[in-house]
Picture (cartoon, helix red, strand yellow):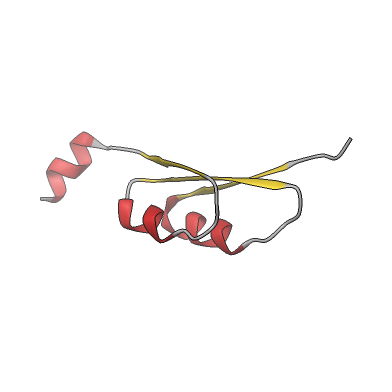
Length: 60
């Protein structure tokens, strides 16, 4: 029975770093609030976009 590794990239830098990792028997999970960073990830994996309503309103 082979073990699987879960690579989790959180935030823009974490998503970019996880996207560049190439480990056998691994799955990837990308979490960020920036949809552009998530779209740019070339690796296969689940992508979760977190919406920060209060923060997004304050930035506009």
